[in-house]
Length: 249
Image (tube, rainbow, N blue to C red; front, side, top):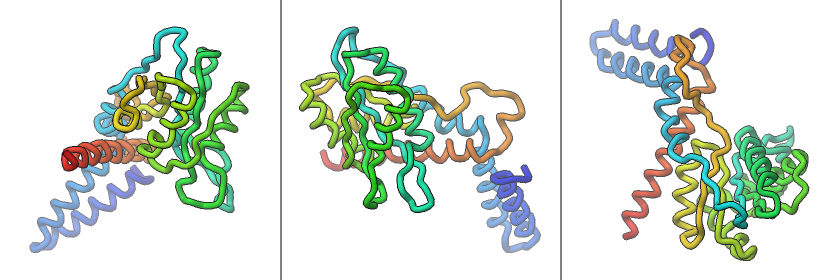
């Protein structure tokens, strides 16, 4: 509790106590206590499991029938950078996706076409995230051809840009590889922009711990706060696209 985010919770509670001592600031004190509780809950393993966990269990891995040719579409998930801001290698989430895709592609041998999808989000004159993922796959020992889609900057654009490459390869089956928390929104976008293709989810790892491990699952830490924030972002994105779809009808 003495390091962030626990430290922030303690500071907020201290401010709430100071506000409570002022007769006209009772409501502010209550609001601060509620905020501290929410922040603390989001920062625990149990809280992250409650917020982000449902996203990660919504889709189980599913593959096309045996000996069916399919594209393995790997969605970008961020890069790490050098001191000049140049994209060096895939970030943690992207690396998990590449690792899962390479294992899958090797197991399917000649029945898979590996496609890396992701541009340069910041618009700088640098190599794309897709190219960084391609290089990582080669380091992992993948020797077959890898196609690169390097113009997309969002999940929706991943699908819009990749569908043309998939059609050019004459494929009707697509395996989406991304992290579990990102899979529901990815499948939502795939269904919207790839309506004539057979889509299969293949989650490449999860953020939340599915097991409650005693007291430690209820202590705040930064990694679980990050997992909760990512989950909220995904829920908001899913809801936003559903609302947009209803408005356009």
